[in-house]
Amino acid sequence: MTLGLVVLLLLVLVLIGAPLFLVIGAVSLGLFWMGNDVELFSLTKTMFDSLNKPALLSIPLYVFAGALMSRGEIAKRLIDLAMAALGWVRGGLAAGAVMACVLFAAISGSSPVTLIAIGTIMYPAMIQKGYPDKMALGVLTVSGSLGILIPPSIPMIIFSIVTGTDVNKLFIAGIVPGILTALLIILLALFLGLRLEISTQPFSAKNLVTAFWRGIPALLLPVLILGGIYSGIYNVTEAAAVGAVYAIGVEMLFFKSLKIKDIGDTLHDSVMVMGTIFIIIAMATVFNYYLVLQEAPFWLLENLEKFITSQTMFLLVTMGILLVVGLFMDSISAVLILAPLLLPTALLYEVDPIHLGIVFILGLEIGYLTPPVGVNLFVSAGVFNKPFGRVVVAALPYLLMVLLALIIVAFVPELTFLLISGSDSPAAGTE
Image 1 (tube, rainbow, N blue to C red):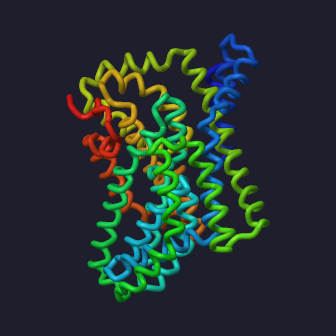
Image 2: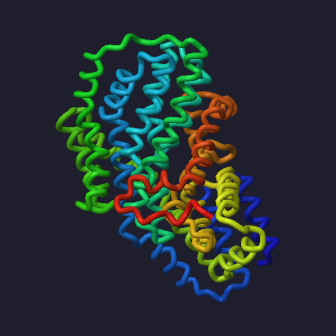
Image 3: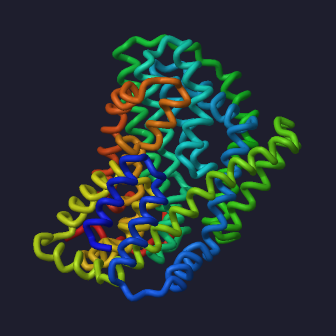
């Protein structure tokens, strides 16, 4: 098989809309078939080893916990708290939607789950309160993508596996950049709320206290997950198990919002999602194996050194690569393929792997919001029953806030290391 046939295969699969894992897997096998003396057993073992990692156990547990809460009462109570806290400000309901997405993302670790859970409740509420359809669509679509950055985050777990970065530190490092991104979106929402003179609801201290009291069981979950990880009581995988068990207990026994049948249905849906993610991981690992055999990381390092002369230039090039790749590839596949390639160059220019990881995740978050493969754009169009083009236009102003956050985080690495106790001083940040 010639290289031309492999390229033709790639184009045909893309044109017929084949799933991404099939595209990556078919092209990888075609490349190996083209002239690499590698036994099929080696490829099979490579795929098995890529999935035989303890940290991967946490992903289905976080997906399961997030799906449980979107079916149950926890998501609703987080939204009630956000509305009671910010609904009295012009644009406050939109700001409350962002806050609700942050709180829910700190539990589910998934952007699409966050968008569905919060958006299905907040979108009708915002329209009812007189928010323009474009504003409601945009703020919810973009805020839903915060699930990729606010820990626990599934792409962060993948990044830690392929680069050997401490996942606990990566989780903690994502908190401040995640909050910064949310604040920038909130500021834009409040500005537009004032400009459009959107109606408000009266502030009630009683409602705020009531909403906070009712939301305590939901608020305890991110504290339980992140507090346990940060204090060293349990690792990321154990935290995911604790979170899933807590979600079941709270939804079934405390809120009484779910039955045994709902647990079974949620488990089925979570398994279907996880099957797709794990197949992508396995296929991308085979592609990485081919790149390593072809010494692609060394080739990339050698060529980057020719025109990259500083740490600043490396970060700019990295952000450019992430933005372009995000147009065509989902975040998990992009992390699996790009992170091992760029890590050696990052170390050469003294960019700390944890800082690189946060830049990666934030840069790929933008990919959730850019066509043609913007996952959250498609989810939003489906959930809110809106034309895809309308969702893209509505998301654009808030997307610019995420881009601004990426630039700030990339060139102010102190934000990444702010909460890491006894932080190893970041290698990134000074030339």
